[in-house]
Length: 105
Image 1 (tube, rainbow, N blue to C red):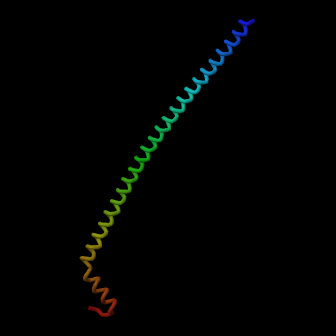
Image 2: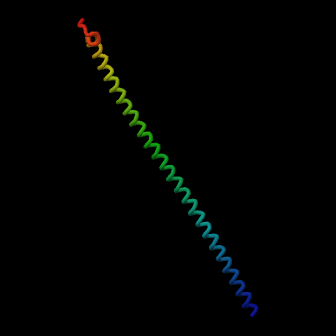
Image 3: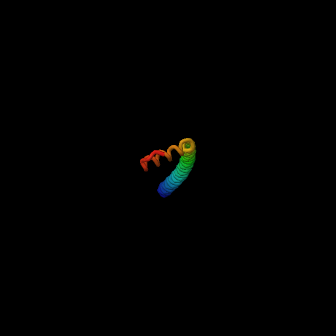
């Protein structure tokens, strides 16, 4: 009888040890999964940062190109106005003066 009780106690201790081992293994697996999850999150965050940088640089280039085109068109129009003023400035001044004074010159 004593042997039977000792055997039951031994089986119980062995069962408890197996449960503890299984719980420890489950914690290790969970810790590994959490570490892997954190690494995946870091990788995605890095990818997002890189893509945002690329998109930002792309939009900056497009904005620079648009600004360049606007400045070129402005310079062309200023040149056209300067040329028109050079060709017609004296006549325009005379016409403006005549309209203000009402007298032809």
